[in-house]
Image 1 (tube, rainbow, N blue to C red):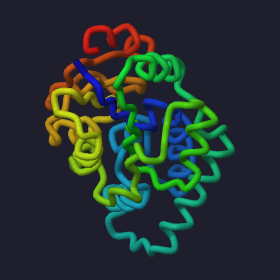
Image 2: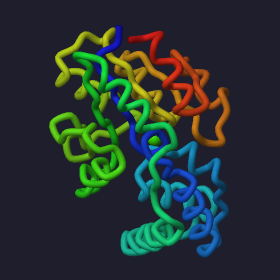
Image 3: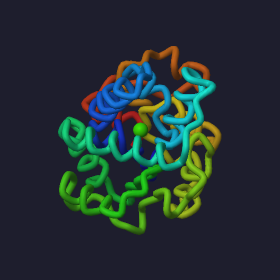
Length: 222
Ligand code: CA
């Protein structure tokens, strides 16, 4: 029986990846770089700075990129993301959260690499009454992000639960890798364009297409 549910944010609770991917694609092209939506999904979890530097390294290995350029690039991408509509709640996510919340003695945690100061406000607007600051592991609590296991290990330690009572809900290969390294049961909700082959080597416990399927799956583990 699972009692602790550790939710990733982007691509699980918020359908933010399509606009992130589109924003990257547009801004990379402006700078003469080739970048597809799949590239964005595969690298989800990497810092934006690394995405920029890695892409330059692969495609323009002789180009020297200054930190100022990286910052300006990141700002340009962020503005494009907002212009495209930013992050919307994932369809079905609130129903899953409410179903878990209704079960006695369950804990809902957010485990994200994000470092936005307004995160809790954003969560409360989209999913009223679900999240509390004490059950959020962000880049502030855990600077060593996914694919390292620390964010999930921290949530597990703070929950006071046994490992077999915990369940991670992730959408990204790097997130799955982190959850696996923490030795936790993991559901992949595959909300993007990747296929099972992108996740297979880390063997998710469940591989589901959307949040509605997660809701239907819940009775198996609670
Ligand atoms: Ca994610």
